[in-house]
Length: 396
Image 1: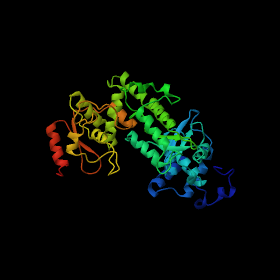
Image 2: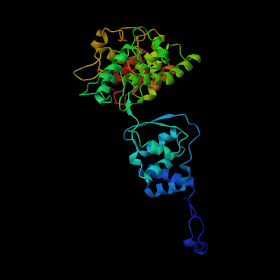
Image 3: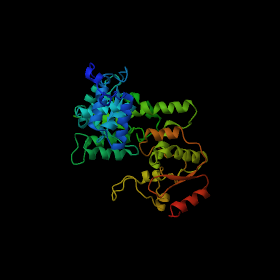
Image 4: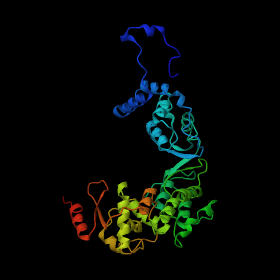
């Protein structure tokens, strides 16, 4: 109950210093709880219980009436507070503090599981909390990271044991994933007819860059490579194609889809600081417009390939000799224009950066030596040389 059902007569006649305190308004209680969460690393059970008691009637009120399924991913180790914030951002609940209070007071917080769930705004908070406790019964979650190349993803799938046929780091399903990805053969995909956008690739091109990096839920008992490939292509179709088609319609890009994905994959590998993606995309587009070679280090790393001695796919650093000696069409130090195709899986933000690049006159950039991954940019070669000498030579 949120309050007393009647008024005690003794309270009315009590001395002023013993009169009942006025109930704390809900908005003020929420603010006080928020301050405690920030200032004390979490609210006390008393405050959480008080907030829950004052908002009990909201637990069974859905955030909306839309029953459209929403895929909701909980990463391992995510605390209840962060899950509540993510649910709020996704429009699945209206009060993240109430969610945290409900799961903590009722001892559910430690029962929330990592995994991929299907929720909707039409579910109330109690139903959502119940669903988030049953990830193991639903499937196995695989996360393909942004910036990985196809073979790197296949290696991860085998090493992680996600596929049920994996033994001692060897998996026929992981090998099949690599074969499908490198061949681009969609004949075995039930929904292959829906992925006509891949037909815009040059003849013989792989699916590099088109297998969208994200978290996917596969059948726990029989996870299949063909299912993962199909889900990645479907994610590309629903998330990337609309952005590209809108950019073309608005005149923001004249690049083909293949060119956009190719450049975005380079931006993905170059940009460590997310805010720099549109700036770096602008640099490469400026260089292309000025008939300059891209001279992008990640393209040389891609051409070099796997380094067994270091057990890495992206060799660092690349030597001056390798810039000029790696005879590959992907080496943008030796070849003009874009490489033949993507070099990795670009995330949505890198694709958006290519479609909406920052407008500037920069043609060069060099990494700062502070370990942040940030760059300093230059419009002329002379300015660039000064930056190289200052930052790569250890100057101030």
